[in-house]
Image 1 (cartoon, rainbow, N blue to C red):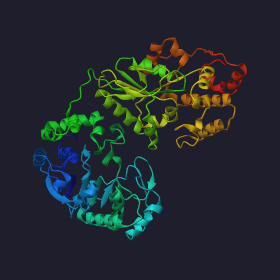
Image 2 (image 1 turned 45 degrees about the horizontal axis):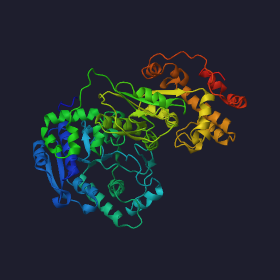
Image 3 (image 1 turned 45 degrees about the vertical axis):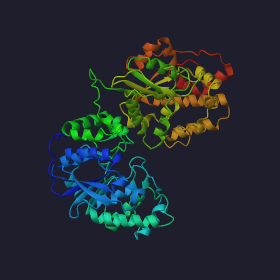
Image 4 (image 1 turned 30 degrees about the vertical axis):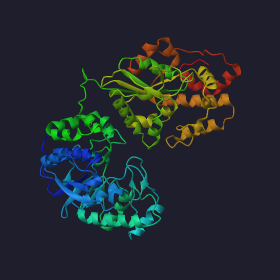
Length: 566
């Protein structure tokens, strides 16, 4: 079924309810309203719960009132039982407006509907919800058992898995998508339990998660056995890029900035605006939302944007390689962006990396600056010499399909496989350098390289849960080695094996080959051209023979695979 086709009329009655009031929520609710009317049964009952009093929550504009009349959406006034101190409390009153005999779908206002769910299938269940994205409250039974006792319930044996952080915990749901039978009954029970938790001393983390704490208790008191839904029904666009979704039905975007990094969603919105131009009248009242109305330029001729991930061994010429690439036409390279670390660490699967790429594209295409290691607009070719701090970097004009690359050595090597899982389209390239030359540079530059301080790395340390057993064993061996030259050599060997173990997922080039024809070799590496044949390469630096022999004892086997002469 295409977006323009009329959806099949379901056999069961249902209503869809969401909250609206003045301010930021006016624009979010307007987008949700149009996307719902465009995708759902034309006769579906849609209810906008209008928070009152207007002096407290803000009045809607005349443009919004016109839009809701055109969409045939009911505007029903509600009062927040918790007052202005807890805006989320509007949910309790809104859900009470739903169907008593049939089912109701309550949606957070910062949702966008891409396609209609199968309401006939959902009607088999008393309730259906997606687990929370992550555990925002403690996940242990010691925290939850007193809550269930407060509701005179037994703590259930069932557990849920939070959808992003993958934490196992007692039932804990995202309250932005609630499908439930007899919504007024649930709303009454939900509110009563929330009020009980509110006044109970000793309950930690109740604000602002009061609604999510009370929700599973209310469902259990009613004897409902919720169907656990996948992210398709409540896709966390603020945490994951659109490309991570399996054709989401509803996107939970939280903020217009999340939408602005997703070309597919912007194209979809443009199509809706053609049928419902009144939505544009609402959004034009605020500059943050007006940006959604701007048409994206068409790429001529059509071609796909390229995402590059640049890694390799430290001191193997990766910064020099980045400068070469940055001077290509329509290419932007960000050297060692600090934002990758929280992106790699926030969840078991690093969805933050493709999200970061999308956010960078959004900022660069808008002409805004991003942090980068450069001087006067030209990337630093050696971060060990001189200034090594990121400052505001404004790229030259880019076409929508420009090439975007980011570089990090140790962090990307530690998470290469995981990044490929969430970003299978990314083109991964790496550099390596002769062990004698590379290790000589380690001994004379950064302290963490000089000391081979693997235990101090934010990723790739011996306790990193993302490592395999043999990786952890190898790193522990490095930490136990007291002789610094040998310790550094063991780390070089470990990192070199990461390149080889990546197989076809990673293309690598020796630094010595890059120097032979810098621009040509750099282009071949990123464009999948033929790489130079591996001829034997000797070292360049003067190094004590005893130290060379010490290094050779541990790196010889892997160095030989790169045709390095020791």
